[in-house]
Length: 465
Ligand SMILES: Nc1ncnc2c1ncn2[C@@H]1O[C@H](COP(=O)(O)OP(=O)(O)O)[C@@H](O)[C@H]1O
Ligand SMILES: N[C@@H](CC(=O)OP(=O)(O)O)C(=O)O
Figure 1 (tube, rainbow, N blue to C red):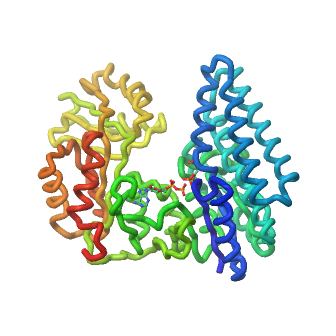
Figure 2: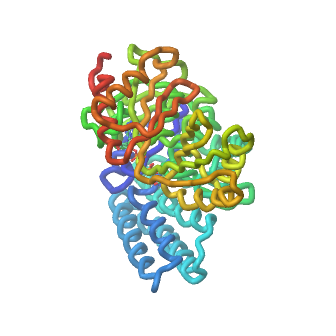
Figure 3: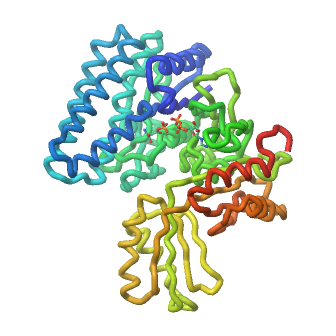
């Protein structure tokens, strides 16, 4: 079978996890599967790269670079020595040179006091670019022929919106022509999270974007299956870190996972489902640390079971922007002005609610975009399009997801009466037109409890509905 396997940050974060990943690849290789491997940066590395790059704009003496270089060198080279001793001299040269290149780039940001979106993407792509040579060497150490390709070399072509780029259909033929001949004789290790524009400028696909890399490649190669290897047994009824009784969902539909990931289920990147869905390729989510467990399969069709609700998600890094004023009532074009300005500033609106009197509109956006959104919209206030604009960062969004709720009365009633009984005040409600989710906003401190209350209400910890 033609199989794409993606290993997330925890699955490649040290020698022990790399060995497990290599065992998994070896198992499929010895069954004569045609394989392409997509890897993430080691856990924590992307965060460190972002912090250091941002610090360079104001840093006093760029001392952060020295710390980062030490951290990256120590972590990567020690793992390399353990998992691929025969290849260590050759590959450590590649890694050291790459770290030097990164260091020079960070110093350039420090001297220029400017971090452009392009530079930021280039810098944060180093997490994957430092890791891929290690995984590939570890495969060769195990007798598996392997080579490294970065996302750009693999043919992933993207839009120019840095930090959250989207794959362009034109990349599909390119990926196919570059990778098909390779997988006949080798197991390529491809850096996740990155692609490039038509002009060859490096872009990144958004946090957790390696899942997306895997499905872009899987779709372009018409893979039989895509396997996402992570640190939990599959997609669960909610984040197990929030509710330890959470249970693995054996089968779930593409649409349901899209909703789950959009509303914060970190286990899959929200855009990663679409390429697989378009080609009808099953995506399995599996645990690197428990590989014999079947995991979750994400497929087409309704995957209806007796349950109306399959999972609850929670996203805490959001903010509510409320725009109010009687002058908006009955006046066409106000919403257009607002959304055009937000789009021009690359602000993604996650939820919208408009009061029936039309005197106010509330938008939920990512918390780190609040300042940009306020600055973008203020000119409308000055032009008296509305009276007032406020931001509330003490909020979080919760979503109840399940395709079974479409056309079934009662889910919203049960959801809100359970929250009411628990004394949780709901500040805003929205239901997607697909009727696969009901999402709502509560105060940040109520979020985890709302998830727990609903997980209990819909009896999600038990196998039977
Ligand atoms: N519904 C869910 N099902 C499974 N995991 C979830 C869910 N919601 C959130 N998570 C979290 O997602 C984590 C896996 O995502 P991530 O840390 O990005 O892994 P990786 O580094 O392998 O890509 C899990 O450890 C879990 O805490
Ligand atoms: N390194 C990227 C991409 C990624 O997909 O990571 P993970 O697979 O660990 O979620 C990030 O941290 O966002």
